[in-house]
Amino acid sequence: MFKKILIANRGEIAVRIARACKELKIKSAAIYSEADKNSLHIRYADEAYFIGPSPASESYLNYPKIIELAQKIGADAIHPGYGFLAENSEFISAAEKSGITFIGPSSKSVELMGEKTAARALMKKNNVPVVPGIEKPLTDIEEAKSAAKIIGYPVILKASAGGGGKGMRKVFNENELQQAFERAKNEALKAFGNSDVYLEKLIDDPKHIEVQIIGDKHGNYAHLFERECSVQRRHQKVIEEAPSAFVDEITRRKITDAAINAAKACNYYNAGTVEFLMDKNKNFYFLEMNTRLQVEHPVTELITGIDLVKEQINIAAGNKLSFDQSHLQINGHAIECRIYAEDVDNNFAPSIGKILHHKPPLGPGIRLDPGIDAASEVTIYYDPMLSKLAAWGKNREEAIERMRRALGEYQISGVITNIPAFNWVFNQPSFIDGTFTINFIEKEFMPLIPDKWKEQTEQNYEIIAAIFGALIKNELIRLSPVYNNHQSDKWLSQNYE
Ligand code: ADP
Image (cartoon, rainbow, N blue to C red; front, side):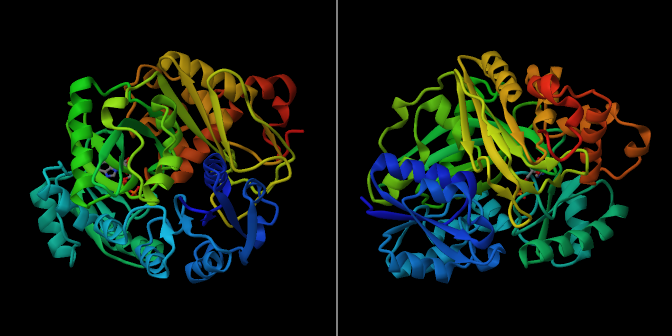
């Protein structure tokens, strides 16, 4: 087993990994940037090292420096968390060459799944259903036109190197294609340094269903069932749950088999996630494979009892999976909300500032993975996720009730959070009955907002921001009870206290 793990990340996931190290009796070393001098993750690790200036490119992404530091402090493994370096195959190769174990898959597996068109081709070859579309980046607009004609409108243009919901454009007819093609290429270049785009069929009002898989270096594989992540804004997940209320036993068997095939196709070891879209008839289509730990892994841990981070570390150390498929069963239901420092009243702009007060909810069935505490700063440099709040119940109804209670108890001041928006979601009939799709926010919010916002273009995320803002102002979203009792009139100011 490893002696010391360097955690190449920050925020809640760095805290989560440090906790796993402690339980495994492995020393943990945190790294931090200028902006993170007082961050929570530093206090959870056994050691902490300054890595560079605040911009991620000069600190958390500076992998030559991170590898050099690992060697200097005697760390024998690096855990990347998610984001930053987690799917950077150059970094993984460099770590492999330096003799430091990367807690994740081989650089080869990451490369195979990193480029979306190549991944689609590999999946097709291995009998994993993919969204109808093309398996090579488009060379020019003429090729795009003929591909779209064959696939049939509506289609979606996507960045081959895509991630985080960026660089995607829905196209409903040929007239829209030229402009969308140029814009998607520009966006892709800006976001990923690679302008390659490709086309696939726009699936009508699907659900986002993903399967947690895990494999070791001895060729053993298991799946840990599915998660549903259809509540999204700007193609990014905000609420995740496990299992999905929509997936029956037969569908579960088929989709988890497909996920295991996907993992085997790239000789995968480590925890990983195979993402699918599922239509109304429960047909499912491969979207992509995330070759890393996923933000929403806690809901899977809550229903299976497996500690995925400890499994990752064990696998990287060369051990076999600590369980096999026959040991696993779904126990109850879990839901997670990503708590962001976002000013929903101001176009979802990150709400920057110092946390003045942080009183997390406790009690039966509640789990909080915090990235902050009172005195932490939310800065412009990184994703403004504050914590992940998860609720477990013996069934979905109990999990929802516990989540409602926990959201009501959660007190954060100093920055504005998206907590009131969740209170709205957990009162919507289509969320409660499980029929919601990836268009939930767009479909359910739109009828509630003033007409002037309806006129704006559908991919404008500002609409959604404005909707939340309007709902709060018009009291269509109830503030959580804690705020209602003590500070409701101060909701719209920067500071609750
Ligand atoms: P990224 O890697 O940027 O996260 P994904 O391919 O995983 O992109 O897609 C992110 C989200 O975009 C999906 O969860 C879904 O909401 C939407 N989406 C992607 N592809 C399609 C499609 N073919 N049809 C409909 N929606 C899609």
